[in-house]
Image 1 (cartoon, one colour):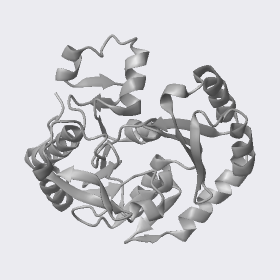
Image 2 (cartoon, rainbow, N blue to C red):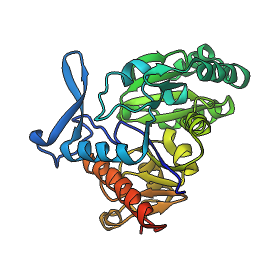
Image 3 (cartoon, rainbow, N blue to C red):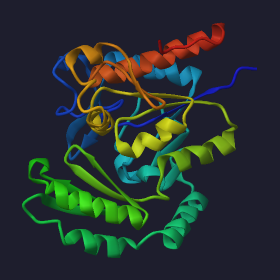
Image 4 (cartoon, rainbow, N blue to C red):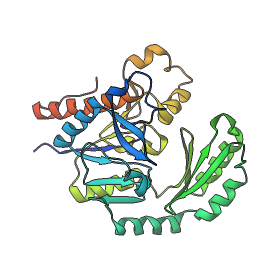
Length: 293
């Protein structure tokens, strides 16, 4: 019997997009609002990606995997309501919309055993977090820290030194747009996805995401898809010293390790990721072939 496909997917800048991140190829009539905040629609999918998402949901177990807190995730109305969701970067697993307390307690215990405390990390970061580049700071459900930053004013060398020190304390840094995240290593998207796999049975995992916080999940999946934008793409370009970042290179799939970077950027990338899923579902019905050439 063919394994069921589990689609573990990041949301922001992978499947759903703000006006700032969506790119300029979409007309207003093509947008479907999926998030409302303070009376305003702030995140969207395209009509095509909504249709694709609904079809994927019929053929695979879709698991949203996001750094959003529970409150932030519940602002999003996806085309179909997934039974499982990973939120707070893996700090919580939602089952039919409700937090799994056993999982959350397990993660909290691991943080206490292995990591520098949240208050201590916050205090250390405040030493370099000058108000000219850090404009707001918040705690996410007592699990991790995130900051609103001015990227053009980031003190790169200072932040790199801090990042190395934080890594030794079992914390990671990730920058996504104007947000900087400080996350304890046990708060992991992949760890939460693994827990779900234990419960539903080990199946064929397709993962999608655009940030360094998605990297472990992508590299552990059977098939990993990423758009040609975001933190992962930028890191890949830097490692290749811009060698593969010229216009011609994004016209074809670019692979690094186990991650396939698809050609499209912005909302078109969301459509392309879902199209790959649909193609894979069809091909697995017909026999073992490769959806990525």
